Image (cartoon, rainbow over all chains, first blue to last red; front, side):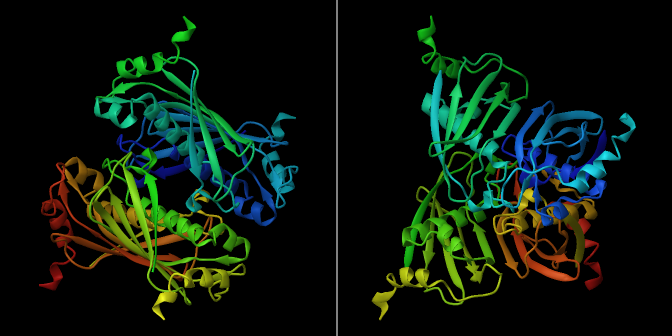
Length: 136
Length: 136
Length: 136
Length: 136
């Protein structure tokens, strides 16, 4: 399992008329947390794209347990429970202090620069593999 | 069943570096389509809020089947399959011409202006009821 | 002079905690109105990009006179007062009914697909020229 | 003069089809940098709003000198050159490393919770005053 954490300070532009973080923004919070995870793994998403690999989103889900508002300091947990195969699944948990405010997941495929489905990039598989080797 | 359609022309600001509609924007497309559905039902969301009713999102899911890009003309179908009870569930389908590009759903609760859970507003139940009466 | 109009219905996601349209969104409203102007001129921005022309923003200004809120129906006026030369300047006026709520402008250059500054595309100059010929 | 700095790592959602940061996002970068300035001054914007003070934007301008892209680390400088009076003006400079990529300003008024123009909050005037006293 790989588990990383990112911090977000809610921007004013991310609030809505209800006075809370508009529900759309958690999609972006999830995204930046998986970018951070790839940084931690040593295979930054920027580099993956330069190598011609893209990870389009196939499915995304967000559950809203508690609301957040402007200026709140949030911790986004990004969790990879299984090795990337044809697809990669990531789970997310959003906390404000001790309070779990959101959960969710995203499912991604791998495509090359021509848009064709491809195997996950070797560098990602190797980097992730180090965190899953103990299971053998 | 209630089924309405909304049209969206993809904005440049909604695209991303991959050259496609960034996946976050479908959440907004879903939202505007349910606002349109409430307009069609004669209970605009603006009016619901003025009466002190809010429909926070409890859960949202999007599935990405085909990508869309700048200037694409999309049709967002919003479908209510069951009468609103404590919760209300809406399904969505996004089409570019004949091509189904996305599906998804959102689940909402009802709260009053103090943030307390409440029964769905009577005007909404009555308006929706007209479309479900045939089932008796 | 070229003068076109676009209509926008304010999305919930575009509001903020103050209950109003977040000031950032007018930048997007301006953008979609100039995309509409290019459509009216018969040189859609999508086509310009396919031909390898891009119009990056060099400068943008927005003035906020009156606020707008969720579900407001806005008319965005886009005005080209001078023929495109090395740069192109567009002025904007946002109205809610009779009320002028915003003004602004954007200034653009022309670059080719390699990012190099270039002359404005011939098709755009010709299309715009028809609206300025009377001045001779 | 008051001068603070904020750091932003460009989010994928902030890029557009041109592969660059969409020009709209600088408005948000400016906003978060002035929120940070108020934090540094000890009068967080969140607290100002709780006290019933709001700083609506009257005018905003952005100049685009160099483009930025996904994952770039930006430093946003926020500069207050004059004491807040009826209005408050802030200047911004965006840097990627040593490279100045953007400049701009925002002009704000002060309103109370009923939307009426009001004098700047005393706590803000006092906090800012400490940085301007040397001029007497």
